[in-house]
Amino acid sequence: MTQLNIIAQGDGHFMINGDLTFATIDQQAIKSVAFLTTAKHITIDLSRVVSTDSAGLALMIEWIKYTRQHRTQILFKNIPDQLLNLAKLSGFDKTGHFAPQTAKG
Image 1 (cartoon, rainbow, N blue to C red):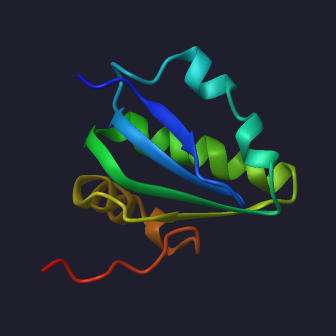
Image 2: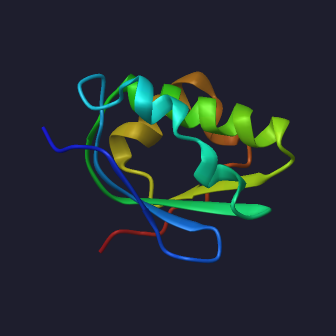
């Protein structure tokens, strides 16, 4: 298990490092949404997510709800396959918050 870290990269860009799982997403992670209002356009890079489950998708949905309430746009990129598959099962990948996936070579 790798702890969840949100790393600011400037200009509304953030990197998620670690696991997005039931074991790593706690109340503090859910409540620490201030970073979502640092810019009008937020981009979250998930390329360094090690492991994920449905709790990761639930957290992303909470972030989307929060940004809607605060009139901020959010985009997720480099979404791990497991998380993207969960989003596709629920149709959530069609919300416009997911950047197009690039081919993995």
